[in-house]
Image 1 (spheres, helix red, strand yellow):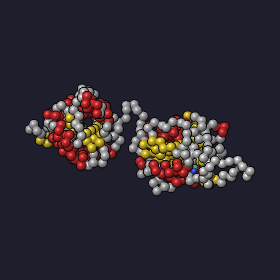
Image 2: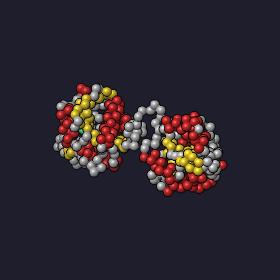
Image 3: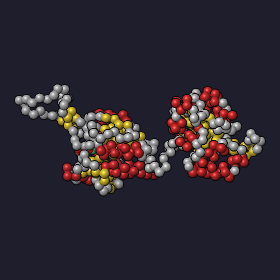
Image 4: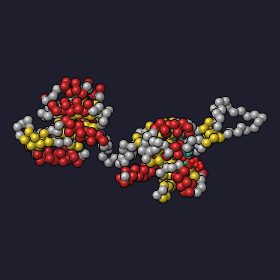
Length: 412
Ligand code: CTP
């Protein structure tokens, strides 16, 4: 859990003193803690003690010019991996359940895109009151996580449920929450089946130099590979796109590495490993000129130069047999005849899990075009998709890969 960032909201309850210990315990485990102290919370612990223990400025006011200048409240609500409310008072829970935003803590709870873990703390009658029951029910439905409260003697002299969990119990709940996807999707947002996964995609052609001004290339535009990288990012994956020379723009939300040659592409792919998925959509040049020519080739009496081609490394086959082999290795097969037969042979030869085969004969207009007709070839058989725009092929492929990963893990 080293490096994880916690935003701790300290509400106004007698258990607030335990939150000071909670900060120490979280920091002992390598997490950083930024604290927000409510007005009521400040009646129980001082900003100075929280600042000393967190080692960071304590945030108290919604409309504080100085604090906003350093970090706006929206940024503050998102600059964490998890939000923890301890103690979570009846008042804080009621505000959160209603969606009120009339102070810093309630505004952060409404604005955050991260999961919230609450450690309730209140008198047992307040905890058992139908109003609090309703609020907790609502908040659970909204995805809020809870730890405690426990049963025990209360500061007010009564005995029953409402005691805030001990710091170590809260730490255990924090660690459990951090193991899941802690970002809350926007309501109505598309599902993120690849959240927490790492995907490497190659795209475009490679250029193999003949001399300083000439090169061997192919007609790949990068449209399909780039669309796949973008679809993987939209599905929640962390994506590295290794792109040959293309004119299409770098996709949003993706780390794009630009290369020229097949050997540079291989190097960039190996540097990006490990990953959960590899999609080799690039049209890697099979050959390069054997001996590097430093000066421009000139016409001469000896006639046209002989290029002396040598074979490039096969990136897909290297990844599929790599010590850090991704769980799912997907290749493309650009064919002009016997599409399925050749794809099946490539599947075996290159040891991959799936081949996306397409007919790139000039008449199809696939190379450089906007649509694609593909066949998914695997050991399980052949699935043919209708002709679709390349972004749709990308989205369908990513959904298919996510389903394969989940089926594999579910069956394991
Ligand atoms: N590929 C690769 N490295 C190479 C050549 C191809 O990683 N040096 C990958 C491509 O990215 C694609 C798959 O292999 O995913 C198939 O590419 P394709 O050009 O269809 O196959 P080749 O291996 O070049 O076979 P052939 O040209 O003989 O059909």
